[in-house]
Image 1 (cartoon, rainbow, N blue to C red):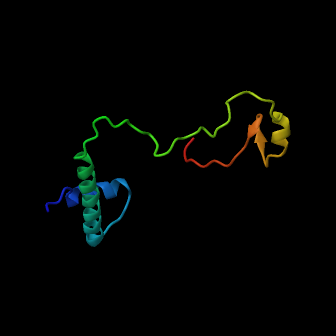
Image 2: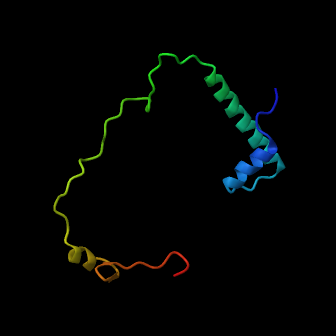
Image 3: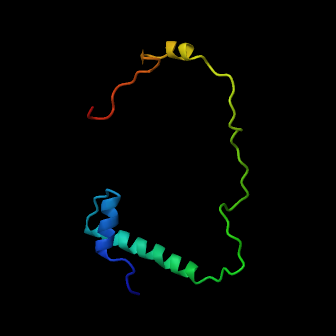
Length: 99
């Protein structure tokens, strides 16, 4: 059986995923990705004529509440519980570099 995916492609995908793989791991990943592509090729050969598209394997019911405006806590009440506040908002340590 020929390889569907080359080592250069595996290196590229590993780089995108920020994975540092040695040669053995690259070859293992190549075999695993090849197996996945073989499975997809098998699925491509199936006749799906007349099969309704599905988005979930089981019927889904929306478990989220309605999005509606309801009374909430007052801003001052919430900010009194904050460790620090500034100009009517929570003050938190800077986590990004720059200005």
